[in-house]
Amino acid sequence: MKIIAYTYTDPLLESSPDQADWGWEVDGVYEDLGKRTQLQQLFTDCQTQRADYLLIRRLEELGDTVEEISDRLHQLEVMGVAIIATEQPYTSENYPQGAGLLNLLHAIQRQQRSRLIRQGHARNRLEVAPPPGKVPYGYRRGKGKYTVDRSTSPVVKDFFEHFLLYGSLRGSVRYLAKKYGKKISVTTGRRWLTNPVYRGNTAYQNGEIISNTHIPIISKEEAAQVDRLLRRNSRLPSRTASARRSLAGLVVCAECQSHMTVTRVTQRNQDKEYLYLRSTSCPQRPKCKAIPYQEVLEHTIETVCRDLPLAVAGMNFPQLDAVKNSLGQAIARQQEILAQLPALIETGILDIQTAKLRAYKLRTEISALEAKLATLPPVNLSSVAQAVSIPQFWLDLSETERRFYFREFIRQIEITLQNKELKLRVIFIF
Image (tube, rainbow, N blue to C red; front, side, top):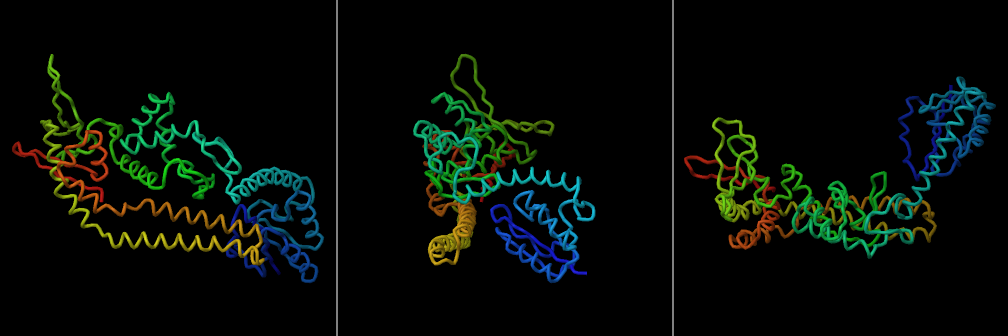
């Protein structure tokens, strides 16, 4: 008994299957990529060397239209070759030429309409054209790419700058509504912050991203800072990212492990206010006492100035530099290959379609490598640590500015009060 297999792969939509996936011991495999030359060879070979069974994944691999599929099924039936579809409930014995096969072909016809649409989208991706759908606010469609909308892009730019300055998503959303009358939800604001389009990249529904396809609204450095701020804010309790006080969301009671919130106390007919840090859900009896906010703030500044340079010095910067160099070299190699493609087309080594597929693959790989590179800490972390280890630096900042820098370096602050003496432990992010 002779068993053969046939696969057709549309390079725009899928990759070639593994030959070991058939689950049968096959005597030969005919594989087509883009064109069905091997299918014609299969018919020629079957006329001289009869096969008993033909394995295919789906019937639509036999042709681009229902008429082609039906005709080739008939040819195989005449040659006495039994067909088994591994990904469809079809065998030529169960579905002889008749009503059952006709219903299956109608179902395939509907699937092919969807396939034609996906092929169109795939061709647009090869041309690095924007995907279908609504254009992100701040852009409009140009000639095959996104172009900056001069009337709305300043609104988006200002939104990003406010977030980079204060690190508060809700605050930036309120700022946008107050200054421009542009009302967006917090969810929409978060989508803006993570949208690759604003960074000059094009993202497709399959999750692949191609970088540097159009003019960005924010730079790569700003995009990396936005990502760091979002990761930092995700570690904080809800709604503390936009809190006024710099220690909000960072302080934890070392005894009960409860987060501490900033409370404000005033006296009647007096403008002066008193700030305290109080445990939100202390399980102990009696509960942990409130601690003066200013005292904790002063101890925090003192600890940061003393311990931050030591923590940064303990980081393995040579290893970090090696990772960055490795990623940079990988990006450079991919860019060199990309630059060679036009010459390969001219010499006839690659046809235009294959070159476009290769270029698309290279661009997505470069984008993935650049994304990894952007997540690494900035190179100048040592110099920054030295600058912020001066107490006067912190004292000259406003509470909002101090909040930004605290959260850039501090993961958590644990405090204890023993015999009326405040003890504080600062846990840094790195």
